[in-house]
Image (tube, rainbow, N blue to C red; front, side, top):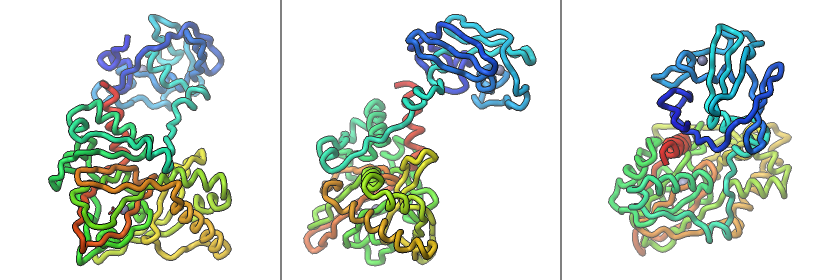
Amino acid sequence: MTDNSATFDIAGYGHYPVNHQPLSIETGPDSLRLTWDDGHESEFHYLWLRDNCPCPGCVSTLTREQMFEICDVPLSIRPLEAQLDGGYLHIQWDHDGHVSRFHPGWLRSHCYSEQARAARQWQPEIWDKATIETSLPTYDYTAMMQDDTVLLSWLRQLRDTGISLLQNTDTTPGTLQQVAARISFIRETNFGTLFDVRAKPDANSAAYTNLRLPLHTDLPTRELQPGLQFLHCLNNDATGGESILVDGFRIAQHMREQYPDDFEALSSLPMDFYNKDRHSDYRFRGPALVLDGQGTVIEVRFANFLRGPLDVPADQVVRHYRAYRTFISLTREPRFQFEYRLVPGDLLVFDNRRVLHARQAFDLQQGHRHLQGCYVDRDELLSRIRVLERTL
Ligand code: OGA
Ligand code: ZN
Ligand code: ZN
C-alpha cells in the first residue's frame, strides 16, 4: 500500500507511509469527515478533494503536474458515493462520472485540521552562547561527502539550527565547489562563484581588508539575500581574526519580548542597503526583521557598513534610530555571541538570512589568513532535504 508513485496514486514523487487507517466517513453538505484508527478526525472539502484528484486524467503521469483546473467543475460538486476500500478513499463525483482514489498516507499527511497544521509548522531551534557552545552541530567532511545519511543529518541541522561546522575538510583551494555540489547550485554574485576572503590591496569590501567586521548578514543589498554561507578556512595563523556568530532569531525574540516598540519599528520601517562598486551598484530597501503573514520572524537583513541614508517619514527617524541602536547593542552582548577561531580544514556553514557573522581585526605582520566562501540558496537546501527524504 505504500507503493504509490508507480501506480500514480499520488501527484508527486514522495512516499507516504500508512501509519493510520481511516475507519469511517461522514458526509456533510460541502465536506466529508474521516475518522482514523487513532481517533483523529480530518475534514476534507469536496472542492479540495476534487482539486487533488491524482488520477492520470487530472495529473500528468509524465511531469506529475496538474492538468485539471477547478473552474471546470461546479462549485457545488459533491460525491454521489464515497467509500473506504483497503484504506483508500474512493469517490464517485456527481459531475462527469469522474472517480477519484486517495491514498491514506497522503491524505493523513495533508490533513488540514488546526492540530495537524500546527504540527507541520517548522520550528527553528533558537540558540545563544550557552546553548550553541554545548551543542554546535559538528560533522566530519569525509563522512558527509561519502554518506547520504550524514549529508541529510547535516542539512537538517542547517535548516533547523542555522549553523554547523564541518571538520577535516580538504584544504585544497576550490574544495567548496565539491561541497556545494553535494547540495546543488552555487549562488553566483558579483564577488564571484567562490570568493577569497583575505586582505587585498584593491579591496571592494570591508571583508577584504584586515579590519574588524561587525556582525552582519551578507548581501542585504540584494532582493534575495543568499541562504547558506560557506566559509572554508585554508589558513588562519595571523593574530586575531576570530569568528563571532549570533542567532538573529534570538535577538529578534529578545527584542520582541523586551523592546516591543523597537521590534515593531525594525520589522516595519524600511532600511536602504547599498553595495557600491566600480562596475556595479546594488541596492535593496526593506526592513531589518522580516515577518511572514503570521508575524513570525523569517529573516534578518543587517549590515551596518552597507547602509544607504535612512529614508523614512520624518516623525519615524528617531524611532528608527532608537530601535536600530537597540538591535546593535543586543548583538554585542556576550550572552548571545558564539566565538570560534577557525583552524585550517574547518568549514563553517550557516543560514545567512538568520545568523549574523563577524570577525575580529587581524594582524598580518604575524601570519596569514585566507578563507574561501560561497553561497547556496535556502531553496536548494530544502529541495535537497526533500529529495533525500524520499529514500532515506
Ligand atoms: C565575509 C565575512 C568573515 C571572516 O566575507 O563576508 O564576513 O571571517 N568574512 O573573514
Ligand atoms: Zn481525476
Ligand atoms: Zn560576511
